[in-house]
Image (cartoon, rainbow, N blue to C red):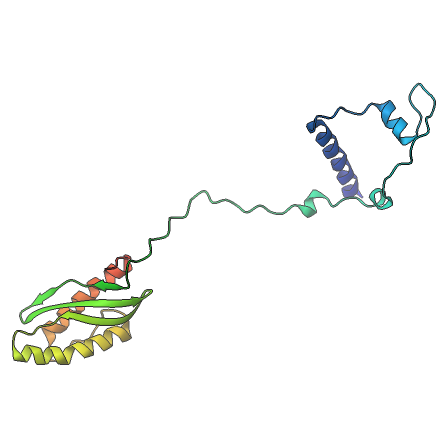
Length: 183
């Protein structure tokens, strides 16, 4: 009951404010009474049209603002950082890492942040033995890098220096990938 009274009072106040805001003039009591067919102060009753108020409008109160109000989304005082720019490509090249038998340089190919391929741009080839060991070590290191998705690789027996150079080039390429750098 109390809510209904408050709702009706709020509706009346809102309507009055709307009339004033629209620039209308407030109704005089005589005019209101005359329109309703009631007695005019200081005069005789004037017949007027029947009020056109719907029956349910008098029996039902409009929903209170408490039940119809929707919560407003809170605005964050901090703005989100802008998204990083889209990468230029899906490859990242590691640095060239020297060792006593030559140099190793790898390039990783990405699908998002997942490594889908590791290729060598350079492997030791100065001597026949270096070529043999590189041909043996490269597929093993590549397969392990893809399986591990990182540079924590086992050393290939007989190709210790080449394995270490491969790891360092791969690790640097992965760090560049994490910073969002692409080649």
